[in-house]
Image (cartoon, rainbow, N blue to C red):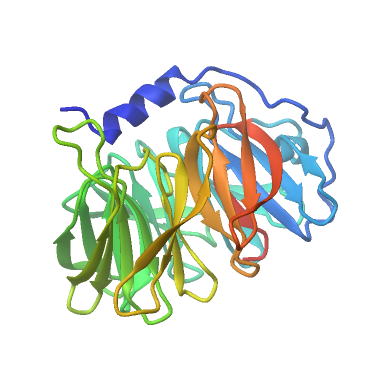
Length: 350
């Protein structure tokens, strides 16, 4: 039986070594205000990951920003995610087994945190001296010191790990290409419980009331098909309290779930559409937010202040992609060119 894991691996191995189109040799990096950053994975094994910057005020787009700020240095292979703290950006570069730390003002590299023999995915900052980094194949999470730029240890878990979010005073960690959530006490690094959901778990968010929400994209290759499902979870009791089933499975997506700034709406990535889910009532209520059959949906993100929604279009996984910015009513606001396989979207300063 095929699963989204195998679909994903097939897609990334087919990705070719294409460089970004319409790139500027020396994009401006001195003024980093009003910027949205796009982390482009590149083709798996092609070592062509890149950084795109978008100034929403002027509409200016710059490609290969990291390379331009670092004497044409190569960022690496498969740019997975971005986090920010203390004026620095942390670029998790999956197949290059590292976290690249750069200055948030000029994008110059300051240090590299090695994740030797790992497959790092997402980073969660616990303090200035502690952070966890999930691992696609490692069976746990890595612990690093972000300030010192050092690797400090590995926390073994019962599964490979993907998304990691704070909830109920603990951390919820999702299983990579799986269906489980494991909870961790960050003070002791001890597991405090496990919850099994459904196939294709690819998003975790905490709402305004402190509930944990998990989106499972399903499996369109199983017989019978497994539909997409959204779960509401009490993070203290670690039990499912409600769920919403969608008509069909969604696509493989690195990030399939977004949440509004006020924590009252969720956005779930479907096969050819985005569903908006009102979570303020007794039960979640879904409605179609955006539909576009011409897009290869790859990830979804929500601006932490304006609430605009961004979907990444990976196209054929070998040519430069696009990101589509949507207004809060679901209408298209703007479309911008990116590098190959856009995935991470980060609003600078957030």
